[in-house]
Image (cartoon, rainbow, N blue to C red):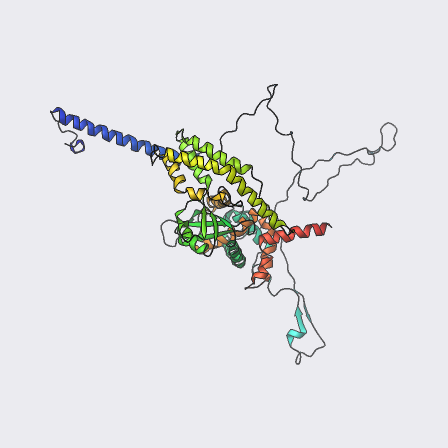
Length: 525
């Protein structure tokens, strides 16, 4: 007899064996429900923590060691407010005494200035709109006969035929650069940007601003294509993706689309975005077609096809693996702390490595860079590999007792399934232990989508990918996107509709920054 089939008001059986069987069924059902309830509660707690909890995985700082007198030991000298940047212009306000106040009240003689006290403050003038008027003067020869001399020889007009960066457009280069920077670097949605411009007395519709974004992307598209082509020459690419909401015409709700970020190495320091309307392997396989090198990424199934022929080697992310052990430790599994202690030792090795050398035009730089990379590789082999071997033994031992679906079991399974890729960073000194660089890059999208909410169309997604490419590359290089775009947009417009790769080279963000840094010492000299 099954306890579940008995009606609520049915009489219970009289024989003891049947009652025992019913009780055992009820106890088993209660145990199953308790297990399901515990799992649901654990998933709910994890969801609430992910949505509202602290995101940092760092542990609280330990208390500072104290000296013999019981005071915290000082690690560095006390310092006050940082000095204001020297490159900012200074405007002086000088307070002086009147000629009458300069006279001594005792003897009437003029008092001498014996010193001054200066105070510096950081001040700001809000952005102001102004009208940029471009005048093109035309000259004609009055002596030549108009009937015998063609007009193109007699008459000449100064300046370009079209004023950019948008042909016959209302916005100047500074306003267009500000609009792109505001949305894609500062996460300001277009309706807020329109409100900011309205405070200057200028009324611009959101649809107009959206059109400007599309025209700016079209202007920058050949440059981004060149950046993508150069990116594929990198020895290592950091890759990751994040979801965005895409509005679909006639659909009742938004569709989930994806923005993919790929970051090149120091020789090709471009951050190139791609937009896909789905989350299949076709996107990354198309975008990284022809690439041969290391791909630093999480164990994403969509990347698996890239590794089949062996030209692309997967270098997995230890931050992702560590995160799963952190979740297990927060769930109360004490054994996870043993794995975290070993992972901390891996990161301690990384902190002790000499930094990579940047590219340079100076003679001998390439040899120095290779020597530094080899130094890092040898240090990892000597110090990190024994820790990895110890961690591998720990994983093999603990997998026998950890439940596969428990947080610890899932962390162990992830590490063991991707063990070869997790240890691949030991192969070359220029590789990183994790993929945090790509994760930090995608934070701009994560912050932006909170403000602008949804991408309006597939074309809008491609526009976003191009403009995120430019602003994220500028940020990666430590540049101000506005300063770069203020010059690049009219410069690219002047190249025409089909610029060559050589014409575009000087407008690559890294090349532009390099040329500007070389020009500054020359001006100072």
